[in-house]
Length: 320
Image 1: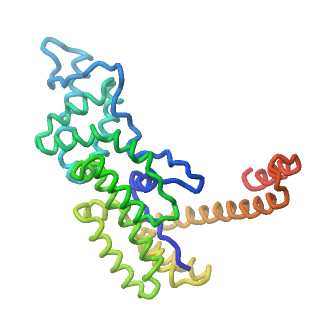
Image 2: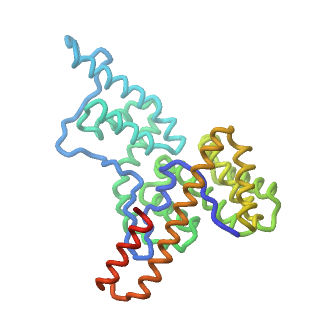
Image 3: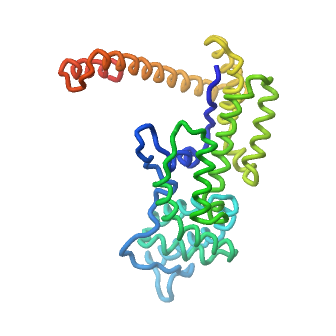
């Protein structure tokens, strides 16, 4: 049976594929690429302090200023590299977290000052433009309507084009580049598994997946390859190998072999337990959906008291 391969990836990439998409009901998906606000209205600007604090100051205030200065210096140092890795949004979120820990009120100002201190002035200018244009990107994404029946690769292509048109190509690459590479690879592997993979040997399928990594990961190859980890590689190989499996017993044996290949014994046992639990939950949801559909056919009127009573019993049966 052909099925999509679910790749274990970072949360940000998984969320990225839903931005601006809609389900069957036509309602926009509320997920956004950057859930953190870019401004804190009414907050006073915060300037960077020298490592030792202001002249003549000592005690807790000087210590707090020193911590802020240290954090700012780290953000200024690693920012250009993260931008080149297409991870500017990760840099921004990390900075927001540090703002909260340091008690900084005007986080946007503090982070923009950190960007101004980047040793790479061109990277700093790109980052500033990306952050300035991000609200416009989010507004445009909220208006983008895409059906979930459209292939993921096409949805990603349209979303990426919108981001580049609104934010700028260089800026979109800095903010969304790693995400785009990761989701593009996921889409390509799923489409491959659902199509031509069936006529190939497992070795040839895995070789094709490696080709797709090179094609979609590009400059992000090393980091994204490492981010897959053993779990991601296990799930890819499992999904491709199951194309040749026709019964449940053979599928169980396949999972056992692949878990033993990709994980040490203790971790393999943990994963087996997780998979068994997931299968039980899926079976429970499927059984509930089937019984609910039968109940709704029997009681077309959703306000019928007998229907509501039976519905309560059904939910109690499956979920309590």
